Length: 66
Length: 252
Image: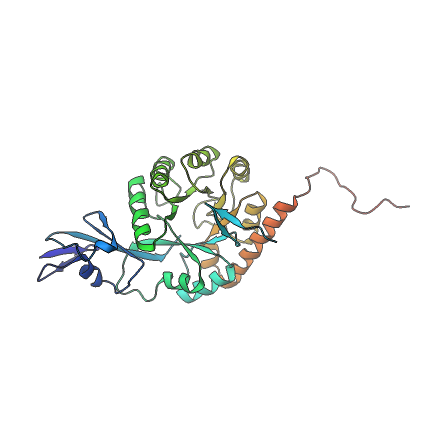
């Protein structure tokens, strides 16, 4: 199964949750938001969100700016 | 003197809002933020970088500075609304510095997209602080759609050209029913003081501090300039005169 996280292709052997996808990038427990195929998914729903083949995941956080 | 900046019912004893872009390191940024006395500071929202060392959020949390996410990098209302909602989800704040720019060269606000995004976000419960042109008409429209402040530019972002149209800033201040924050273009301390003397409720700046040779020192200069300008505004400047007015009594 292939999913795209922040523009990079990831191969997953089994179905993974959004929580697991985010953990591939960061262990931060706060300050992070995620969207799947353009739709924002609330953090409380990450565990229950199963990613499907071809899903596009965006994981954002705050950086220096403005 | 107790003279807080009040935005959407929230009080800040500092009238200096800082940006965090351009600092050479988080350590330098930390010292500059402390020296500035700021209580509200902007951050941008970007893709997580797994290689990033440290987080600007940690710096703000340690210092007890409220975070103000921006929508920098957005060219359309739809992009900005989406990014604001992601920021709300990530940071747990419904406050947003709304930025919708027209092009990469000037980074000037795109007025139509800005107004559209402001209206949508205000209706969605956001406290919207829009970065806008120094246009009194657009400022009025932004207030009408529910913005909690208006933040006209002095000159383009990062240009350090100061306040190019002081008259327009005065016009915005005169008619605004919400705080006017001078945002962008500040080059040095006197620019910040002038913004406050014109009646602005606050100043938002980043580059002039973060890219100064001595960021911490310039941050202190900005803190003092904002305070001095505010006091001068409250005190009321003397009228300009064509000829001298003797300050000593006549001889005799």
